[in-house]
Image 1: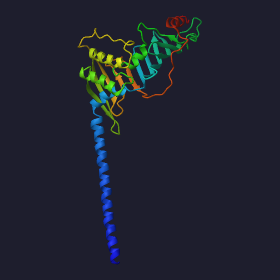
Image 2 (image 1 turned 120 degrees about the vertical axis):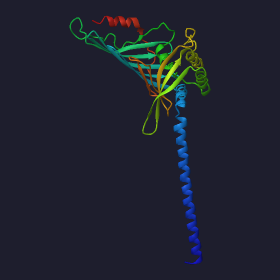
Image 3 (image 1 turned 45 degrees about the vertical axis):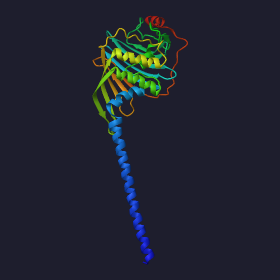
Image 4 (image 1 turned 90 degrees about the horizontal axis):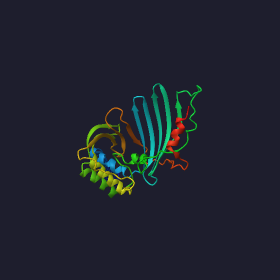
Length: 308
């Protein structure tokens, strides 16, 4: 090997060592960055307090969502699935199944509902009963099935849509500043106080928190009024808090996904209380709008009572 070859070999060895060192530095930097990002995600972003208030922020920029409500009481049970558009349509559709045992007589009713800002509608889609007709046969409910009825209400607004979006965590579409105006009011007035009740962690480290949440009703309703005002619906949904004292409270368990900030379930304590589950965020399902052929609800009930 000549002098030139020896020098070239030395240069190559030196460059190889430098490249190896660069690779090591890059790998270490990536691992450190990943570790820092993971730690921030797990211990800062996913912290319980951030997840709790983040769920309010997320809900107030939600265009659509789905719910499943299950109820059970002696002799009856129900299951209601609904999808709500809380953005431009401001509309909710529901499908309900109710079972009832009345003195050994079994009833099963399937219904569909439509809730708008102004009105509620419902129709029976399938009704069955173990009760026999006057002729000893099966009761025929075809005269009531499929007919939409205006459910009517003493209120000046649709209750089904209001119940869907004006819960403990209100749903709608607000700007960032408006959302945090409402959240700040809730926090500053102690409208809601909470304690971490349970934590579930999946194999990927994703945490789901359950918070025992105390609602201070007067302060909360004042905050909800702010939300309604920013939605431009104050005339439709008037709230009067004069009948509430400062110390009136209610308790509810809220289960929240720490990563997505989405409300997963809401449950009031005690037996027989409904479990409200939330899913289908961002659903693009086409919803039924207000029917044009709806009859008065009392007429529909009269038809039902005449089935013999």
